[in-house]
Length: 484
Ligand code: AHR
Image 1 (spheres, rainbow, N blue to C red):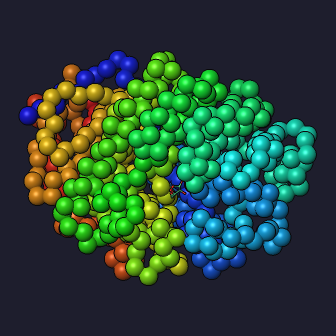
Image 2 (cartoon, rainbow, N blue to C red):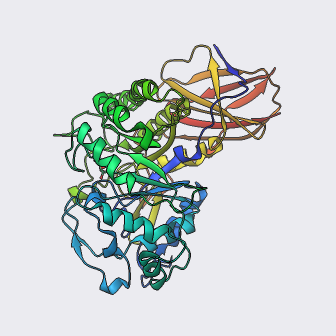
Image 3 (cartoon, rainbow, N blue to C red):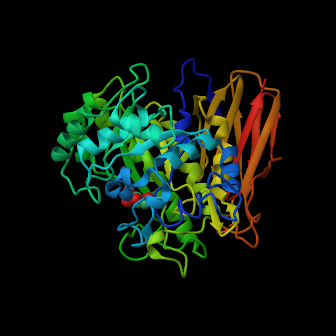
């Protein structure tokens, strides 16, 4: 059984922003996980954990969405600037009712981006904020000349404006962000975006409207009908719950039965149908595909770990997450002509995280390694393929700098598969090949054993007679780069 990879002249561009991340003021997503403050015993640079930042630099985080999520619609940015000791302490009403001391604010966020080399994606507060508050925040961040907010920014130590690449106007406005109806939200969106200052005509801020929850096609229809010309992207939120049950048990992150492995895979695959259907509606109003679908919250969502604050959404991350990540990233790449950014929820210690921390310790999760392996597809050209794909196998292919990249997942728990790729070009060398797999379906890393599931060199691929032959083990993700 062979898959022929089609050397398209102009396959869609796979935006590197598909590999974006999301960090909210939620549990230990920021405090403790990323930001420990400059006086911490944990090694840090300007308050940001050196170990975590160094690990994230290896996966080249392209963009980081902040400050929420639900938190965004309670966030008042002026409380998070100026001397930290004077910042207002508030209650994080969405997440655990804990005190939020605002020590991580706009300046700390841009410091983090600088250390990571990532771009900014900020979500405005339209739920409990005002148009003026939003406009002044953008003025504070981006006004190059003389103005009240630019003066305040300089007084707080930042002379030059920052680059604000993308800006979200509304988060889950259909739910916790205001319980709005789509007609009303469309008007609120139109109003807010009118007052979004754009000081750099050459690099306008990219405007993201709150799009649908999962399969709410009516939301997409109404928003596109009423606001297409005012927006650049619309968001989509979809989480993978193995049980599909938000109200009772979502399922455990580890120690689950095989049935919940397979249902997680099936739920992750639903992303394809969601994107296809929302895209079909968008095509009606935007046939040129100017407007993008931004999947700015996705990932697995399980029951929290025992003895942790239920509001902190702290969960383990196993080989199952590596496979659902691969399935989802392959889907995003397939839809690269519409999906130009995605942000997994969430980068550290929350939901499907890259990294888990405990005091001064950290572990990289299986999901981290998938993001590491998939870097080869960032800003590459998508390759289509034709031929039969074995059951329970998912793959994606791209070309960059003359090299061909293939990533595959085999989510069958017991069956190894052989996959053969053929091409019209000649490739002579395998320049890089990695695998992540494990003995158990819930294999995961702990603080006592941080290397139970890690990326390893893959030796099961060979180039024979112009074909790439891959022996793909059960429950594994593999990425291969070949060159001519
Ligand atoms: O990612 C956790 C939460 O999930 C976000 O705050 C919210 O937008 C979504 O419901």
